[in-house]
Image (cartoon, rainbow, N blue to C red; front, side):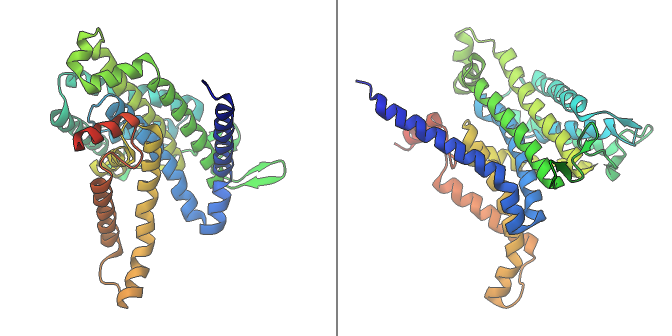
Length: 359
């Protein structure tokens, strides 16, 4: 017999939790800005960008089971497209509402170009090919300054237009009904809105026929093909969808920073985004969000605390704070993977797989 009273209580609890989370997200920039200052508010903005990247990579790695080690290339494509279309470099100043969809389409096209030659590859072989693709894109960005100066080479592109909507620029405080909204707060709300949109699209994809086809390919590609799934098209769609999210995040990054250079899109960035997906829990959207937030904020906590902690314990700084930061960060990753191999918040299916393998 169905307990309708219990269902009603659960629904109320879920609504209350959602409302509480919404209020917390709305007040987060004011709370963090008042408690920790503009530096940590800027880190929070970057955390939202990395969450968008991790959600895009989760489609490829978590849903479809395709190990992509060059995902940061799509981030770079989106960032440089924004830089070229909204800067004095070519004298173009397109509006953001035209650049971001264009960046998503161009990055999605690059995703298809990456996926087409790798349809027969899986596992380590696919990782090596995608890693090479990411490095090729970075090297091209670094060298497309002769004979025609397209990307300005290793010097990067500066003077990029900030994100603006008509006459309202997010680079300056915005007056709303007599209240001045600081620039970092405005960027936070824009990034949060787009991140929530990507979460909504990802949830809809996960529960669709396409999402179930991705899971079938991840579990057993031969069986999926035998069941009538067009594995070629479905895998290309995974690459394209993941890449388009990366392109949007890259465009936002360029408008936020007002500067891009090839050094921002190195292999280490791809590894970090992959760590966010694995650490949070592959295939689980909310686990990936948790992983993206932690791996953006945790290194900065280590960066700011490494020097003072050494000074308090030893009376002097023994190790370079940057080196100690990466040491502590690496140790934290090892501990988590030893005791939570499925991730901090794994999907139900992945948790059952690890329990079965342990048994």
